[in-house]
Image (cartoon, rainbow, N blue to C red; front, side, top):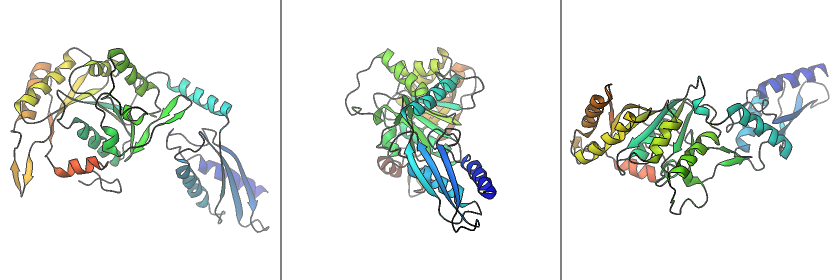
Length: 355
C-alpha cells in the first residue's frame, strides 16, 4: 500500500505537467483530475494498473483525444507502470464549470493585453487599400512566429472582409466555455475571426460602435493565455477599427503593407500617418508583390520603389526611423496554398519551409 501511495503521488505530479491546450493551464490546477487509483496488476505489488478519472471542461471537448494522449504519455513514462493506464473521461458539472470560469474571468478581467507587465508583442497589420496582400502577410507572419516556437495569436479585425479562416484552413467554431471563447488553433496559431460564427457569410452592415465592441469582445471574451505575439489583421484604410485598435492597444505597433506602384504607396502612407493622431507607433513597412521571379529574372510587374517611398515619407513625417522590413515576391504558390488553407511559409508538418 505504501508503494501504491507513492506511485499515486508521483503520477499526480506528472499529470501536473500536462497542459490543457486551450486554457494553457495544468489539468491538475484546473481541477480536471478528480481521482487516481493505483492497484497491483498481478497481486504481487510489482506492476500496477492505474486508473485516472478526468473531467473535461465541456462535453465532447474537441481536444479530448489530445488531452488523453498526453495523460497516457505522462503515466506510461513512470517506470513502475508497465500496462496502459485506464482513463475514465466525463465532463464537469455545471456548478464546477461555473466556478472555474468565474475564477478565470476574475483573474483576467477586461482587456488582458493592457495589464501592467504584459509580455505580448502586438503588431497591427495595416494597409491603405485592399488587395495588397495584407491578410496573407498577416497569416504567414503568424505562422512563422509559431513555427519558431513563439506562442502566437491572431485576430481577424477586418470585420467586413475577413480572410484568415480561409488562409488557415479553419472550418470550425470557437468553443464557448460558459461565456469564455476558446480560439481555434490552426498551424500553431490561436485564431479568432467573425468568419467563424454562424451567419458570417452574410453581408455585415455594422457601424462604428458595434465595430469597436467586436474588437473589445475579441480581446476580453477570448481566452488568449498571454501569448508571446499577437497579430491583428486590420481592415484597409484609416477607419473606425484602426482607431479602436490604437485606443484599446496603445502598446501595439503598426506594420504597413504596400505594393510597389505609386498609387498604392501614396495611400499606404496615409494609413501610417494615423499614428500622428492616435497613440500607436509604426514599426515598419513591408512591400508585397515586389517582383515576379521568371527563370531567375526579376520582373517588376507593378513597378518598383513603393516600399522605399512609404518608408522615407513616414520616417520624415513621424520623426523616427520607419524601416522597409521586407520585399516579398509575387508567387502563384502563395495563392494556391492560401486557397488550400496552408501558409506558404510552412511544410505540411508545420515546420518552416524556408530557412
